[in-house]
Image (cartoon, rainbow, N blue to C red; front, side, top):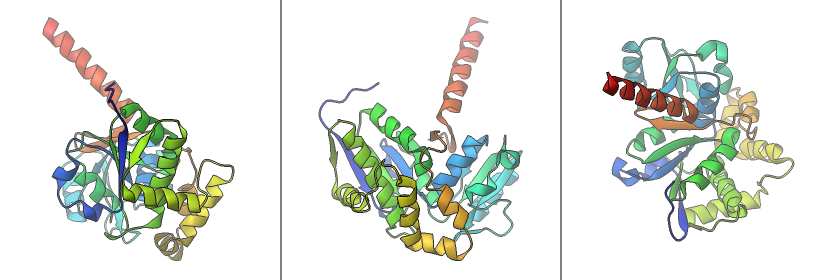
Length: 273
């Protein structure tokens, strides 16, 4: 583990549209936030046994990747609804073990996959949601380095739910005893989360759900019939896993660790032959 002297910094970026070029995130530790719904859905999908998630920047690109891949599914949405011709949309309820176990999911969404692809040069990149909140907090603590919380936002603009999530993460990190420097967007996110009394208290799930229902995107999802999605996306630590963006696809950290160990073992065997 790298030990850094001095205070680590958390920068919150309130929407991915503020990242004008990939080099901005080069060699950074990035946490991608799109709680309604991309990062929440991807956490569910990988936890339920998807082999990997491959982010694509548009539906045409996703379809092209899928044609060249065996055992894959096209997945994603535009404006909250499944893309025409795709197999699955962006509701976490679509990603049952029976539907996706062992498959490569080729994913394109309005906001979330844009954030992921902009992080391709990052040192580390993980997906965050309320569903894996504690895993994210533990991951950030383990880095002992500066971190960027990248809110995907909605249609290139600020959205309250991603900012509130960033604020809750900052609040929990501060409560853990370590000192963190935060930028103005982080300070605003922290104040917003505190104003909604969103911390790891008793009825935190109900507070998250209420916040979703008041948000612009939450209201839109309700209007097109995704009531259950809001509830599932508010369930804190219901899927305690850590999706990592590694070599152009997303996999669970433990799976990457196993694959890396196996490759190192095979290399050692080959060297001894």
